[in-house]
Length: 267
Length: 322
Image (tube, rainbow over the protein chains, first blue to last red):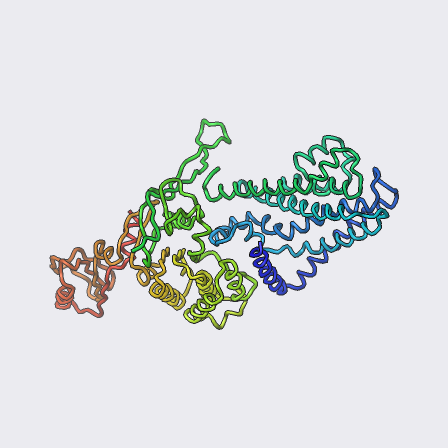
């Protein structure tokens, strides 16, 4: 782990040095991300301004709900988004072979290779809105909840990273999996930016047990804001960090299977 | 001598989809198995320099990939450093250096030296070893002037030298070179060949080189393995191969007078007549070169003489065609 961090640090330093060659593009990328997500937050604020609550959720609750999803997505994106979605190009250009010829794990090298700098803009917006949301809450938040919050973020990062790896790994079997990923990951996950209680039961089940995006933000938010009324909500909420780790392990398994196929050892 | 590489009946097949002929339901495709490498066996000892040659699609790259552990063999055995290269890919990678003429491992936007810093981290090269190696390669490949330049600004010759240095920084015991001189000018080619020779002599580095420039082989390798259609056709010392498979020597005479086919020399296998010149082909053991020249000069007013030794190129060409 120490070795991983120290190498990652050298890579990030080098990455920013290279990025400095294109300062304008770097700044613009960051700004456009910031702007885009700032506007999204504001649209929630406008929506919520007209009504006090939606199904008992006020703006600060929604901010936490959306913030958890976005924060974990951005951190995961910083780690793997660029490399994982470029897997197809890495295969075609033969760059993947070069990585396989080095004495480090492939996933490690993919993390090293491209630091997702553009996601920094998202992180800044999210942190601002999360702070505002926590500050505006009248009820005091206990230390247990803070610890849970941190665990939920870690679990969420695992689940988001896992999802990116899982969908990226499709490139080992079939090129051009973009459209499928858009629907399964982006569109369906987008649904969890609203309280799940708004949706029919079937959707809730899918988002919990099939494509478990609800563990990223919905169940954790229930716990944090004290909305876990039913027992199952408390249980799923507390299990969320674990679910993230399990999903990540599953994704890594699929990735390894894909790599095996690539190297001709199976499938 | 220790064996670095040991391959035994090594094979790799691919399944290729093929459309079926008439009478079949459209859309249903059959599969055909194609053998890229078929039951090849060879051993390479420590410090050997082996030229691995063959036409495009002969199975060279497939073999190298299996030796490097990034491709699993379909059948047969392979050992590199005494262990299964596929299972011990990462461990073996520490002792292997690779240069691809067509791929780069340098960071495009950054000065050359920054890629080396990253490689130092990736390979966990100790400071002292890193400095010593870097210093010696920079010197040998004359890289000092462009070490601080971004890779995207380098010429191909400079870039390839930088690639070599990158592949050698961790002091590999085994070097795979996949067409490393492709597209380079004579001067850079020479520099790179010298470099390969030098590290082979100084460090006993084992070299496996694929190339289409047979000059590379002649100047660098002691042994050649020639493969075609996934099978080894020739494997032996370069000198031996040349001796055993020697083609015809030839002497070309530039002469304005047309050749009249009147020279009787039993050792000459054939005459080739062209406009303004004629050539005698012969074998060394059959007739002396001087004898041919002397006879021709007696009969013709010759302007110039060109003597040609058979090259490895001719030998290889013959095998490629078969």
